[in-house]
Length: 256
Image 1 (cartoon, one colour):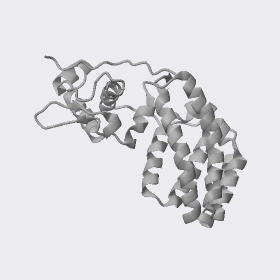
Image 2 (cartoon, rainbow, N blue to C red; image 1 turned 90 degrees about the vertical axis):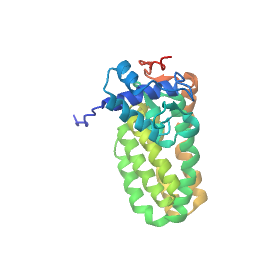
Image 3 (tube, one colour; image 1 turned 135 degrees about the vertical axis):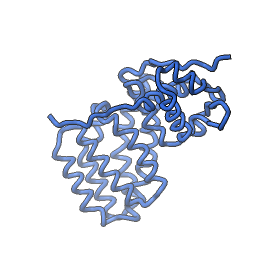
Image 4 (cartoon, rainbow, N blue to C red; image 1 turned 60 degrees about the vertical axis):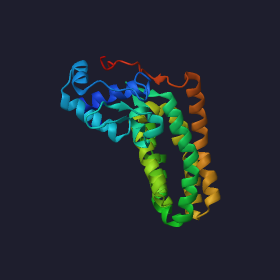
């Protein structure tokens, strides 16, 4: 059995996730003040340095506003946070958040064909050999998690060839959100990562340097599974989670 890295979660990580859950789920509203570091440490049963580090991380991701000598204020994360928050939002409390998963899939479908077209225009024939190697590797395995890894490798090369810093950073954030959920998504992503010939057509289109054909080929790769997964997610309803994302924490409000 292949060994997997052991993940140790730090206390600041746990504090971050508990406060994040309250902010995202509406338990702490925009403009609301967080309890003091001392009070948070008491409620959560952790040290003040751990709370301070977690709040610094939240400030860096623009979830809260910290002003020296004043209370820490919750910000509207939908207006201020960036894509770097996606990994924290997609998998929370042991499950996939369906609303976030839907957003990731929609963004991927919108961006993927454009990136493929840019790669064809700017990379073209130089990608043929390396992309063909990835598709060959994809064709030699029946493991849907491994197939997803190969598909990510292919898109990583395509994004590089597109030579767009914005799309590169977007891909990094989407990948960081997607990779922790590879096993959970394996059954539903099997439809996409198993279509080897569609990937070969995409590689051929990019290698030919034809942006329009590459755009259509990328749509062909991404569309079927995306529609199927979005249909399944719509039955669950936005905000639901797979398999279990019941809230387990509460954060006390500031005392009067």
